[in-house]
Structures are given as C-alpha cells and as structure tokens.
Image (cartoon, rainbow, N blue to C red):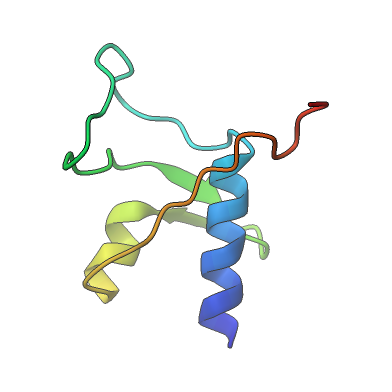
Length: 71
C-alpha cells in the first residue's frame, strides 16, 4: 500500500509541474522513453524515475490537463 501511495504522490507531483525534463527542445512522441527526472515525494525524499525503474519493470506516467490549474 505504501508503494502505491508513493507512486500516486510521484504522479501527482509530476502532473503539478514539479518534474524537470533535461531536454525540452524536442517534444516526445508516442513510443519514446520518458526522460529521467527527479521530484520530492510526500516524505521529502528526492526520487528519480531511473530509481523507480530500477526496482520495477514499468511505470505509468499520468498527466492531468486541469490538475492544479484554475481551469
């Protein structure tokens, strides 16, 4: 259950714009790998996508267009 909360917190922070991609000059297209990024989890620990992928075979990244926006 804790892992699920960490993953949900990771996704929520990502959707809120906390993630910083290393190269934003070219947009991602379907089939591209997500660039590595680091965010802070609910415990204040920095977590990177590469660390999560080292423990799991796949990660789902969800983007919510209206999350944390006035729209």
